[in-house]
Amino acid sequence: MSHPRKRIIIDKPGSYGVFRYDETPIDDPGPDEVQVEVKACGINFADVSIRLGLYRAAKGAYPLCPGLEFAGIVRKAGPGIEAYKPGDKVFGACRFGGCTTAINTPTEHLWSLPEAWDFERGATFPVAYLTAYYALHHVGHLKESDCVLIHSAAGGVGIALLHLLKLNGNMSVGVVGRSDKVDAAKEAGATFVIDKGTQDLWEKAEALSLEGYDLILDANGASTLKGSYGHLRPAGRLLIYGFASMFSHSGRKNTLKLLWYYLKTPRFNPFDLTGANKTISGFNLIYLFDKVDLFRSIMETLLRWDADGHLPLAPITTFPFEDAVSAHKAIESGRSVGKLALVV
Image 1 (tube, rainbow, N blue to C red):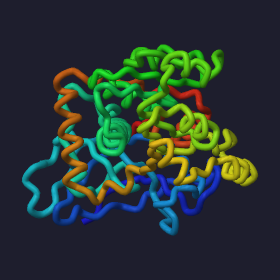
Image 2 (tube, helix red, strand yellow):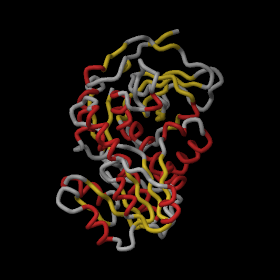
Image 3 (cartoon, rainbow, N blue to C red):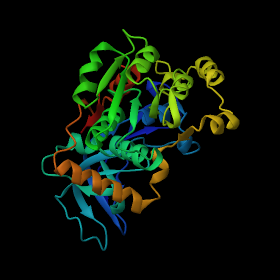
Image 4 (cartoon, one colour):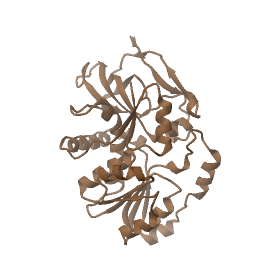
């Protein structure tokens, strides 16, 4: 039996005009699946990369429905499912397919929506907080004594990182690109905030931590990687999880800019790494979907911390489901704060 559904489809990479709204019905959920009537879906920088054809995990997968997180109401449970029933409020993560009004999703990537949450928070929580926790505690091997610098500190992941660092008791330095983002980073728990729009980034970073940083999280790419590496202490760790500075603000893939930033991206010599006793790591949340036990363990920890009041609500900007273009323009502009969501 099929049910109504509308999905955002990208047939091939391109600018904002590549979005197509498809109304092909959805079939009943299969074994170990739940059908969710989606009420909100998160928009992340990964979705921009997917639209532009720059997301490695999406190569060869077009046409596809973007979207990595969602929240809604259970419409129907598949055979053998007892944990969820029609009417239950849930949120989840998915390996693409979240920008839709209905989704069949495996229960292993689904959770009950906390009573205090609305659908918008449920749809914008998984990617940012799973990324932040995994970055700090699994890749970054965070210690309480670590001094941590975070680029893009007023973005979705940046705010999640600051929340977790405050909870852990770390000194944190949040870097923002505009003065109107300073308050968001402070409210998220940054010990200090550097405004690149009015301050010299590395001069200020040095003044705040003369010996450098134990951990730096960088989603900018070529524009800051060299400086980030240079400001690590011995035994410091540089975590790379994005390349936002390589993208244009026009909505189109700027091949010349991509090439320029690619050529500017620093190459790190293994002899330098060992001599300076520094570590560089890169990661992408999409590859954790197969590590179900780890995925669920991290989320259970995060939900427990949230229930205890340790994870404040991050800013969320919403757009109508039919206006994905405005959401993508907002996140590409570099002016958005916190998370973005499409509301059905």
